[in-house]
Image 1 (cartoon, rainbow, N blue to C red):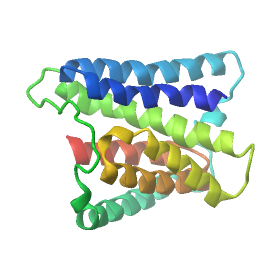
Image 2 (cartoon, one colour; image 1 turned 90 degrees about the vertical axis):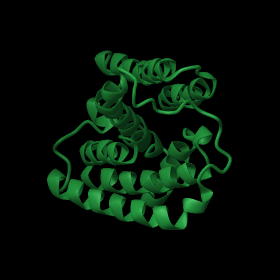
Image 3 (tube, helix red, strand yellow; image 1 turned 45 degrees about the vertical axis):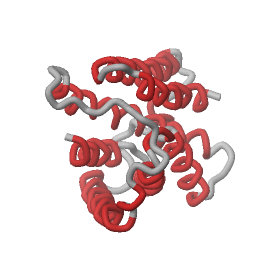
Image 4 (cartoon, one colour; image 1 turned 180 degrees about the vertical axis):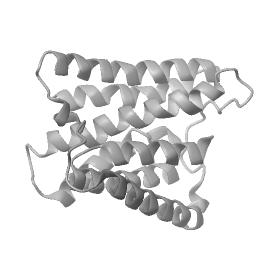
Length: 201
């Protein structure tokens, strides 16, 4: 139930992107949705209904985190290059009309630094850390966990088109595989930020 409540703002967030009249308005709603989920989880941690480890917030996982961050970066970049070749024809297919990034806006620099960090932290806490804790209550099968969490992660990008949905599904599986291996979202969070920066900034 906690997982579902935390995920809802991410689904609703895409509606703001479709109906926003300006880049600034979209950024405001996007940040508010992400912060709402993080605040909800923060309250549960404060009240001891959740432990930081339930969100993947651990730095003492198995394996050296720097090593796994580099491995994850390599896998992510390899897929990114493959996607650019194989999935390029799907660009724009079934994508909703959305507000474009405004590189002339005063908040663009903030969005490409703080904003992308917020995206990486919020999505990794919820779609890797919390998802892993929630799914482990039903199955210990790592393949099922990776597929189920990646499916939900792909769905929250429903307005961005077929290619991005497929990309998010694959990235979600790769990120979850490493998160399960090291028992921490640290590598996935760093690589998620760098990937988004590479793709958007």
